[in-house]
Length: 287
Image 1 (tube, rainbow, N blue to C red):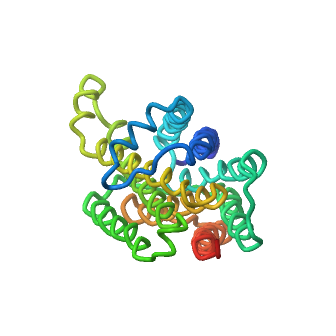
Image 2: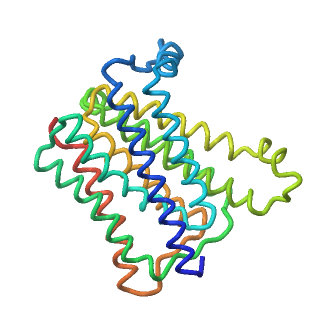
Image 3: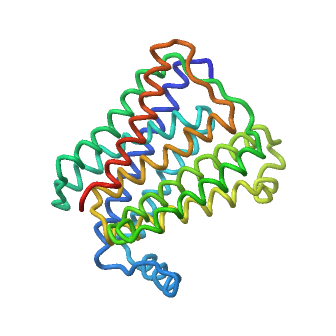
């Protein structure tokens, strides 16, 4: 996108989407102690219990509204920029979790949370130059999906990560990140499709189902992480991981590039590196 004002508008829509999604997740966290965890043997029973709970169902509706705005933002802005700007909702979630859920964090954990928010701010200062993008490279996108799906399963090998909720939070972030890439592929196709055929062709497009499956998996795993982890940790950790996938995938599969301006490029790279470091700090901090 070459128009800076239009880019700013779509990124502002992304921030509004992140706030709605954060509010929905906060309500879901309040129900974690009263709702069952979705495990292999009780998966569908747990989902039915979640959907019968009015608070959880209302939270899901708020999430859906936020996701609709997110799709609108993705329609005309680079996926990696929108994804990292979505971290704006983390600050609101953390504040509400501390105020209303009375959750606390150790200094190292606060440093990790601050690092994630700082990465978002650094990215915002690099937006002036913009980022180029191209139609998706489908073979690369498929490879990225397979590789990151494998990486999402890796943390479950650690008993500590399983018990403290970090594994589920990381996996949810990877799933949400893949959902972002698949949604971007779908929106790129949607804008190019003929209006008469768009509904029928959308239902036959595999990216619609890939994006839906990835986001549902991410939501289920994040709700599971709320059973073991404080929301003040699970939410930033999931959000940080959900940004790493679009950052890498946006460059590998969509041809997104760094800004030509050296300072803006340094800020962009710094934001990416800080996101990785901050999420690692949260994942390995003592409970």
